[in-house]
Length: 350
Image 1 (cartoon, one colour):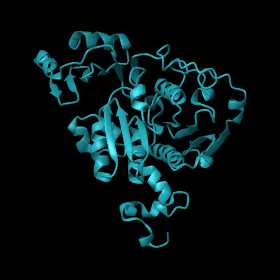
Image 2 (spheres, rainbow, N blue to C red):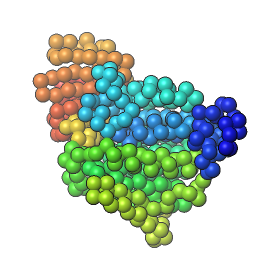
Image 3 (cartoon, rainbow, N blue to C red):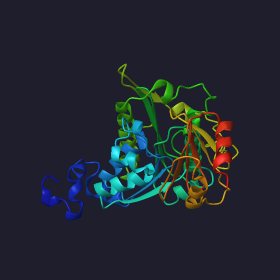
Image 4 (tube, helix red, strand yellow):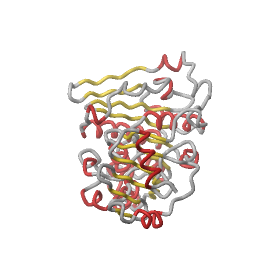
């Protein structure tokens, strides 16, 4: 394909990508027919979504539980200051930007916490899951779902100037739980609040994840990296960790014993301290939908309240409470779960 007339007109925008021999016209057609779930649309997720939409993935389903804050902009490349001022959830803002970038791609935005009760619906029909999350619990849930429904997924994580990525092909490679049989105990690992995070490592790891996604979606499983890739940008270190022995000798509860403890709800919870946010998320899967309009009327006079179609925010002297239509809430100003529940019960409980 050395000349432009070799490229079908409907694929012209992908000309440079298709000239890479492993992609070509056939690979691009496969991309346009593929469906990807991006879990989390913050630092990693926004770069992943941006890259995959520009590459011509046919459908992108973005799920994110959060809204934008000004300190996100240092590393979340899809957004700008106007997006922060809009008060809209990240998934909704991301959808708007991505549709402007490539109208050929269908973008689905889901404002929700990925949990045991909705993961099956989110994974349904997708060819690949890519990880833009920031916590172990969600990754264990993704791992269970990927193995249960035989969907490849690509893990990525960053902290400080270090990041790592691993590709999981169910039934072929070790899974995330082979690498990490159990979550680290609370406080055992640094968070982005204590260690900080540099934007360049986010871009490196998200780019690795996106490249692995392109390999899988174009049918080049032979090119998939079967090792754990670890980058430390500040100290100039790169490692490739072989994982063969994990698979050969594994008694993994997930991929060997097929005990999906996060998928069944045996493990995991409905509350989470949000990394680097001084905030707690409370979720109530069994709760009925909340009328944000009625809640706004009830909170009148307590403190400043703002509302849009996706969330309501109450500002108090020491806290900020953001409520979503499904009853989920983010309580900012505390990392104490008991205090967060008390505030929710006082101002929101319906």
